Image (tube, rainbow, N blue to C red; front, side, top):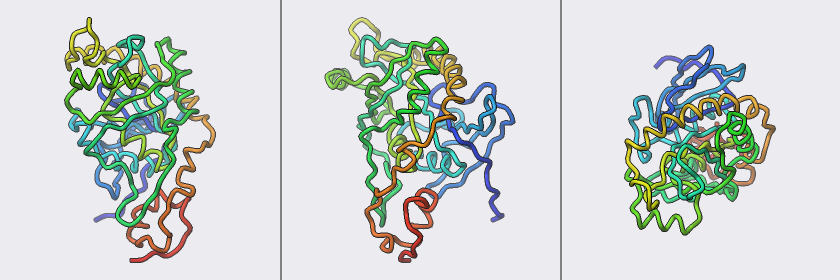
Length: 299
């Protein structure tokens, strides 16, 4: 196997969800394949400059939308972005609304998550090393503020804060489930932001979501039940808004100063350093080089 060349670097990453598979206006663009110890990311990473800011774009579902929410290799995606120097991640996600006041076509910048996924690996730390990162505030407040400001600047109807409930999918909710989530007071429902947000926190990356509302799930009494056809029709309109929002957000996001997200592993790794197998220390070195002292672990 030939020697790997170090990929180009970027500070901000955009993870594109349903309907957003590229970024308009990207200059000096090139695709790079980023190997990871957790397997292959969903797609090659598209690197380039957007209005002078170096960004990376990763298609969450892969080119041609090949991976369902449960099949996405979230660990490889986040690790790959960390490997090319990314510190801030903007996630795009199509969602259903759980509130009358949040209408299809609107944008939500959530500040909380509820994780109802069942089949997904949600940590980098297992098999001989344990870490407990704080996750009370799962969204980077500074990055979320930048997204909110960008949305308002391009004339989008943006809702600040709210809870995103993440279901397993790929099926949509039953009415009983939808009514239950409404009782919880959540704002939107989606299938992809977890464990993505948890892994971003473990990787000490700032993370915030632009949730693009496509439908009312199935709770609404006067709207037709959610269908893929209806979602795609609204999504096409949302994506155009999202592209303008992202372009406006990139510069302000680039100016976000260091925040607690980027020190999330400080004191979070509870396994004694000399008890961590050397192979595992090597595997996780990219993630732990700041938080773990340089000691020799077991083989």
